[in-house]
Amino acid sequence: MLKFTTSGESHGKGLITIIEGLPSGLAVDEEYINRELARRQKGYGRGGRMQIETDEIEIFAGVRNGKTLGSPISFLIRNRDYENWQDIMNSGACSRINDKVLTRPRPGHADLPGAMKYHHHDMRNVLERASARETASRVAAGAFFKQFLEQFGILIYSYVRSIGSVNVGTMAIQKENVKEFCLQVEDSPVRCPDPGSEGKMIKLIEQAKREGESLGGSFEVGALGVCPGLGSHISWERKLDGQMAAALMSIPAIKAVAIGDGIANAAEFGSRVHDQIHYREEAGLYRDSNRAGGIEGGISNGETVWARAYMKPIPTLYKPLISVNTANWEEEKAQVERSDICAVPAAAVVGEAMLAFVLARAFREQFGGESMEQVEQAYSSYREYLEKVWQWKKI
Image (cartoon, rainbow, N blue to C red; front, side):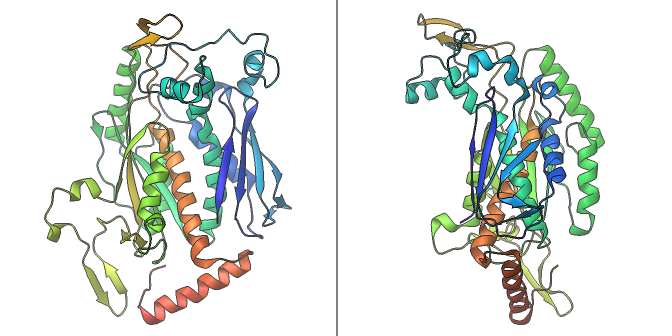
């Protein structure tokens, strides 16, 4: 079973991650991983923390001479801001433990329910772990999973679909142009491939900044080249769309997920929703639409796997909402922490990592193997079966 675990606080020494279940012999490009980390730090509307951190991975175990060993992989991402917080966040005695006490929880954040659950009077003990800083670990882990999937022709993309009320709509993405599309997305400060919408999004972020507000939005994330058969209909926890929804919903501030056109489909007649199946000898089985998001019955069907995730505005406001100071039980304005105005572009990068994890895990379950050679043999045999028996000819 492929899995990964993260550990660390936002202003602690760093973030530690352990990955288990990748086969031996997978080539690992550390510069690729660092580029993924840099992508997460970009985006118009990000806060001052991004000027402090320059995230880089330090691999401790599980990789030798640029290839995985099959054993657990562990790595560290250091928090450069820790030098300013070590007397507050040290694991030993902290001489400034009372300097950044949080007793005025932010509505919409984990501060209050987390403190109630874990019996923390200083809600910084919740804030530090609930912070989206943890997603740097996910992006780095996702870079491992992406490199694994790319060996089998699976390419992952994302783009920002909306920020606030500005919506770019759905973009047509094909495997033959996905690399050019991704470059276009990366060139945008809001990761939006439509220049007209990009300008409107930036203006809206500037307005929110002036007014002490924050903004949410939505992004689309997808994977091209996914073969049929990942996931399963036979048990609820094995359904691929269920796993995708859970993974995307786990990203901080994501409050809704649609697999394919799931939300719009709910308002349509069935004849306008389901993707009809066609056949041509030269093309094999194919669809001329993909409203299902590449998944039917919890199983990938050979089309592009895609979903949309919807992010609420960040709960830290520079014009704070009413809260209660639990030190004196008086109503006061919520605490203000250093934060982003809008983090939808960064969330899209995290979404790529989480989709990569779900697909890599399903791929490992389908094809097994302890080495890349064994996985490749199993996948090649399955491809031959699909082409011979089911006329599946997609690359």
